[in-house]
Length: 394
Ligand SMILES: C[S@@+](CC[C@H](N)C(=O)[O-])C[C@H]1O[C@@H](n2cnc3c(N)ncnc32)[C@H](O)[C@@H]1O
View 1 (tube, protein in one colour):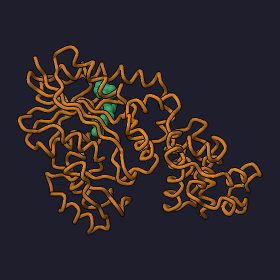
View 2 (cartoon, helix red, strand yellow; view 1 turned 60 degrees about the horizontal axis):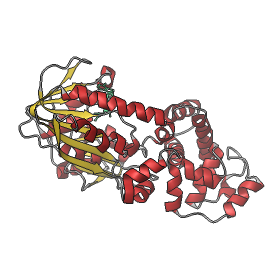
View 3 (cartoon, protein in one colour; view 1 turned 135 degrees about the vertical axis):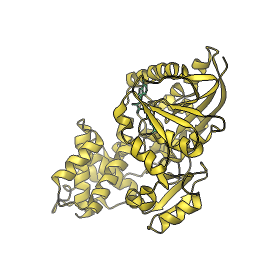
View 4 (cartoon, helix red, strand yellow; view 1 turned 90 degrees about the vertical axis):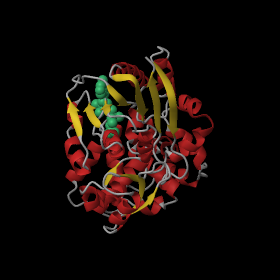
């Protein structure tokens, strides 16, 4: 496919998403209907679509509207690409620019910091600005870029240098990331990770550096019994298992289907994790982890369509659900035990405010709170994440 044909494809997919299709579904539908597209084409089209979704607000402003074509015009303006040369209407290229579109190209480009403020839903911007304070502008900028691929080194199998060497032997270059002791940031060969021997042999797992750092906030010493109450695919349970190889770890999720990969992942990692059926947790634990369902606002670089789908009502429902989950999970914390509450949210209503309300009952006290923000160059910044460690007082 020519560069212009890839843009046409991105325009079609963005229009499907605008009409309500989930981004992944729209991309899959296009790929199925476009057998001529090679893996390079699919990756490039995907990048265009995700770039446009992350920056939907500012690209709409720059491109003169919300359609796929407008968004791609906005993207080209930011990239400094020659839209006239690409929008020729020849072959599979988008139709030539209208006079109105051409006039947009002549207008000066606002600076990135100003554009970034448009890339939040209007209703959420004031809340985020208040919650992030002095970091709001920098986080807004970092959230416009593509998220890096991070790996967690499985210290049960190797150390960080050993994992780096094994990956490099398969053409995957990585750098240690300062946020977590186990974190590697992939700088080339990311698409090869899941087919690599290093991955198959359990030396590394895909996991954002902030998630790793969150699990590192709690000492595994003396945590013989661990419950991962919202285990999902098991990312946090596996990270904890590597730090506490002798712990008895139980994974639980209201949707057992979400835990289906845990046995295979645990086997690869050499970890022991027992699955509990929904509502089937019994007994008390020294550490209960609650990686709560949340807005995901800290991870919107990876799932940018979720940013535009979130509504105030859905956020309020999530906050209510988090309260219920906290209360249910807390019943399994043994006296003197710890509760680790985590979200991948940037919002105080899901993080600090949630925890402050929870400790008002006087059963738990706050030991530590950690807020991880995507700051600095997007290609190095980890996701936004929050972790609170609580101690059961009575
Ligand atoms: C953020 S995800 C967990 C991700 C996972 N811990 C990981 O690291 O891969 C939140 C999970 O909470 C689960 N969940 C939602 N409501 C729940 C509830 N009431 N009780 C237990 N789990 C729940 C969801 O099914 C989802 O898998």
